[in-house]
Amino acid sequence: MGNWMDLFLIVFASFRLTRLIVYDTITEFIRAPFHDTVVESQEDGSTETYIEIKGEGLRYWIGELLSCHWCTGIWSATVLYAGYALLPQLSMPVIIVLAISGVASVIQHHFIKD
Image (cartoon, rainbow, N blue to C red):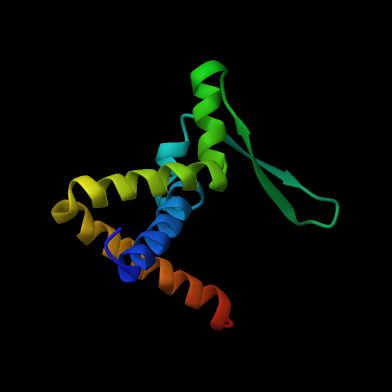
């Protein structure tokens, strides 16, 4: 690893890529072949949404991976670091954009009250 700033960028890029894959609506199409979204009505009128993983074997394994932020985080970090180490000219712009987005997400969540 080159320096502390690169580590900082990869950490926040990994955080943001993980959230993008596991939680964000925009990437729902990636999860759709592996997850069913179930919405249940509660007695108090509210709803609870959860996922059920589809299939078995490899399909189920991928569904598990895509529903676990810890699991996806390992793979996100691995892919980003591999890009950083092997193809820095191509990967650094992606890492920087993801890192900026990751820091903005942390600021929004922890410091800005709606």
